[in-house]
Amino acid sequence: MARLNILEYPHPRLRIKAEPVAVVDEQIVQLVDDMFETMEAAQGIGLAASQVDVQKRVIVMDISEQRDEPRVYINPEIEVLEPDTIPYEEGCLSVPGFYEAVDRPSHVMIRALDREGNAFEEEAKGLLAVCIQHEIDHLEGKLFVDYLSPLKRDRIRKKLKKQRA
Ligand code: QAP
Ligand code: CO
Image (cartoon, rainbow, N blue to C red):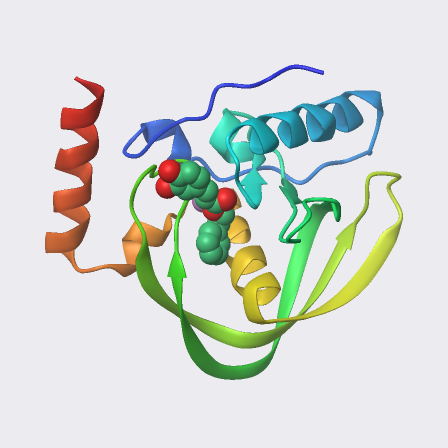
């Protein structure tokens, strides 16, 4: 296992669209395991491969209190079951220290491949629904700050730049 470097906003590579995984092979399993180690070390609840500079459609998540319910989504697709949105205070390992409310559909069906390459479906509400949509956005090169006003987004960009300097 290895801890990977997390790209931070506004890194241009966060904007690259990720490619579907053709085969869930040893290399993908290794990526999944490294992403879990990276996410755990950073105390995150979700991480997309795009955030560790790998442009493949792979997401890891653990939204459980005990941090003992690892979830893997390879080539995830969502179908909106309830388009009415709920606001949720979102954060992101690529935007450290900032949390803002984002509106997203409250109820979705997720279809994906697991760590063994088997297809599965999962109905999602609440934090799970929010988190999967946030992570799939990463695979499209999109960040939660894109939903904020240009003024808020620019403030965040400038503060992050200052923090890193
Ligand atoms: C996405 O985000 C998410 O700023 C996952 O200093 C978050 O794991 C979806 C984190 C909330 C829905 C709701 C952020 C850790 C972790 C930080 C994360 C920080 C340390 C963010
Ligand atoms: Co994120």
